Amino acid sequence: MAHTHKSNWELIKNGMFSENTIFRMAISLCPSIAVTNSLKNGFFMGVSVIFVQTMVNLTVSLIRNFINPKIRIPIFMMVIAGYVSLIDMSMAAFARPVYKQIGLYVQLIVAFASIFARAEVFAVKNKIIPSVADGLGMGIGFFLAMIVISFFRELLGKGALWGFPIVSGNPLLIMILPAGGFFAVGILMGFFNWVDMKMAARKASAETTG
Amino acid sequence: MSTDVKNQQFIVSVSPHVRDEESIARIMWTVNFSLLPAFIMAVYYFGPKAVYVTGLCILTAVLSERIFQKGMNKKVTSTDGSAFLTGLLLGMNLPPNVPFYIPIVGSFVAIIITKMLFGGLGYNIFNPALIGRAFLLLTWPKLMTKWHEPTAQFLGLDAKTTATPLGILKEEGLTKLIEHFGDKASLYKSLLFGSTAGSLGETSAIALLIGAAILFYKKYITWHIPFSFLATVALTAWIFGGKGGLFTGDPVIHLLSGGMMLGAFFMATDYVTCPTIRKGQIIFGIGCGAITMLIRLKGGFPEGVMFAILLMNCFAPLIDRNVKPKQFGAVKEKKK
Image 1 (cartoon, rainbow over the protein chains, first blue to last red):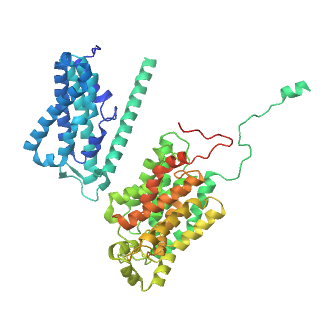
Image 2 (image 1 turned 45 degrees about the horizontal axis):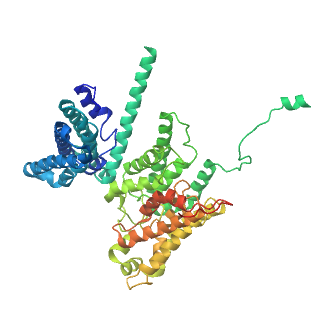
Image 3 (image 1 turned 90 degrees about the horizontal axis):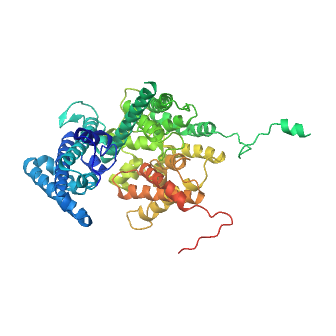
C-alpha cells in the first residue's frame, strides 16, 4: 500500500490549493454552480462538506483493514450516506431557512466525486491522522472555493452580502442565475490558473538566477 | 548551365499560390457598410439616441479588443472591422432608451468573454453580439424590454413607451395588433419600413433587405442559411400560428417583425459560428427557424431569434461532422 510521505500540514495545504476540488480538479462542479448564489448558502454547503469529508476519511481509514476490496464501493457509499444523513437532519433541525434552499444539494453530497475520490485514493491506504488531515484539507479547499464564488455572485448579482444590501443600483441579475455560476466558476478558474503560471514562472526564474 | 541552376534560388511554398483581393478587413468593412441603410432608418425613427447607443457599443468593442490584445502581447487587429461589426450589431439589437452602462457592459462581454477569451476572431463558438445581448437581457430584463414609439427623440425628452408588435401579438393577440395599427395593410407597411417599436436596427425590414442584397451581390453570404431560416419560420407560422386551427396563421407578420431579418441575414450567417458545408447550413437554418417559432408561439419571451441562433451555434460543429461529404473515390464503409 502506498503510504503518504507528506507531513500533515502539507496534506492540508495540498487539499486547499494545489489539488483544490473545484479550481484544480474541476470535480463537484454541480454544487459550485447550484448553491453559490448567496454567501450564506455557500458557507453552509462548505461547512457540510468539511464535516462529511473529514469524518468519511476518518471512518474509512479506521476500518481500512477490514474492507474487502471487492465490495469497497458499497461500503464507502454507506459510510458517506451515514454522515450525510447526520448533517442533513441537523441542518433541517437547526438551520431551517437555509435548509429550505440548499437541502436537496446537501443530500446530494452522497454522490460527490470529491468525497468518494479521497476515500478511494487516500483514506483507504493511509493511517488515521494523515487521512483526517487530507479530508480536512480537501474540505477546506472546497469551502474556500464556495466562499469565493458565492462572494462574487451575491455581490454582483444582488449587491448584497449574507443578505445585507451593500451597494444600491441595478445589480447584474445574471450572476445569481445558473448562467452566472458558469461565468463565475470559469473566470475564477482562469484567474487562479494565471496566478499559478505567474508563480511558477517566478520560481523558475529565481532558480536559474540563484 | 549546371552552375546556373545551382545559383538560382527557387521559392518552394505550399498552396494556395493565387490569392484574391479579398481579406478579412475588406469583408468586415463591407458588411459594416451594408448595415448602413438600417442604421440610417434607426436614426430617422429613433433620433440621436440611436447614434449615441450604437456609437458607445462600437467604441467599447474596438477599445476593449485593442486593450486586450495589447495587454496580452498579441497582434492588434482591432482595425479589421470585426470588432466594429460586433459593436454595430449589438447596438442595433438594443432598445433605444438604455442607460449608458448597458452598451458598455454588453460590448465588453461580447468582445472579451465571448471572443477574446476563446482565442480571438475565428475561434469563438457563439456569435459575440448575440451573447452580449443575451447577457444584457438576462441581467437587466426590465431595462432591456422597455421599448418606445419610433418618434425621433432628442436627448432628455421622454418618448411614449409601448410594446413591440410581437409583444402585443403575444399578450393580446392578432386582432388587437391589427387594431393598434389601424388595418392590416398599414400594419404590414409599418413592419416593412420600420415605424414600429423595437430594437434600433431591427425594425426596418426593407433597409435590412437592401443591406442583404449588397452581401448577396458580393457573394459574402449564400442563400442557404437565410432562406431555410425564413422558410421554416413562414411555414411554421402559417401552420401553427393561427388561433383558428392549423393553416390559419399569418406568416408575413412573423417574417417582418422582431429581429428576424437582422438575425437571418446578418447574425446567423456569421462565418465563424455557422456550419461550413452547404447541406449543414440548410439544417442550421431550419433549426434556427424552428426554435425561433417554438419560443415565439410557446415560450415565455415574445422574441426568440437570438436564443435560436445561439442554440444552433452550439450545434454547428456537430452538424458539420455529420454532413461531411464523401471523399471522391472513397468506398462507403460497411456497417458491422
